[in-house]
Length: 188
Image 1 (cartoon, one colour):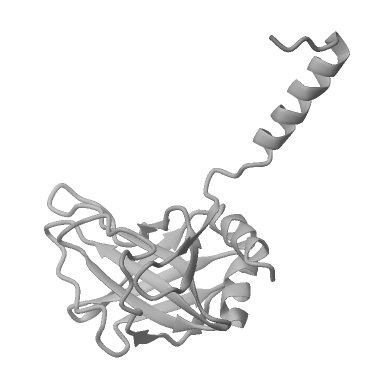
Image 2 (image 1 turned 90 degrees about the horizontal axis):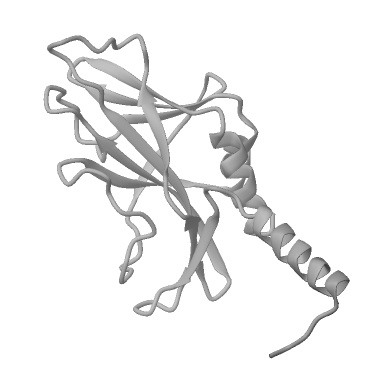
């Protein structure tokens, strides 16, 4: 058995507690993909966006959810970015195919950011898991400047086409802090 002086034991406990306290609730994750050899940077779990209040939930209409998460693919120093988007519609909502041109719009503080669908590399495992098996998932090309704009925006929204109208989803206020931690963890 190891014997420590009381003040040494106290310092050791305080150091351990300080180390634990600095961990965020949604922290960045990094994984090496065994199939491609790429390093994949993502959040531990995607950000949830809630359907806007203007599309009120009534007894005959349920709430749908959207999710997004940044992805960094590092292929031997060639870095590219994407935004993983997942739409989990309630059974009574009919959304257009999110991979269609113009179907999904990203808005940052009311400024619209054009999104272009991209194919993800053939990874052994994706950076995020879809929330709903019946939902739709797509990757959209973004750059580092857009990612930084997202992290500094007071309001992050995704609009999806649903028939002839658009349905808006809004990120929680803490999404900004989560994205800022992600950018810092990636070294930017």
